[in-house]
Length: 148
Image (tube, rainbow, N blue to C red; front, top):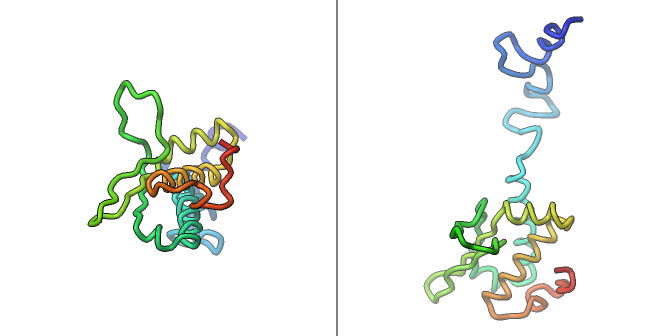
């Protein structure tokens, strides 16, 4: 079988991509359901799980906080440290807003070998503790400061 013939099996006659059951809706991949989630979607899910876990522990505190996710922080050119989170607000009329930065956390998790969920959890606990002037152990009793 020639290389050209072998190549044609994986694309349609217009050169648009794969043919076959994996590219069509099926019981394993119904219409609208991607076969693979993006890294951003996985990260969003990890943050949602950790916020839900914190919300169960401190419902009154988390009710006063809005959480957001951005890909990267907006930094000055001379910045030396890249933050994992950023907090704003917290007046009597507006809630605290904590922004979690996806790419710095993902890169640090890969480089250090730490789990993504552990790093997200640590970043959220430390930011909440800083914003609310509490110790990390008051936010999360299982928080271990020696893992930093």
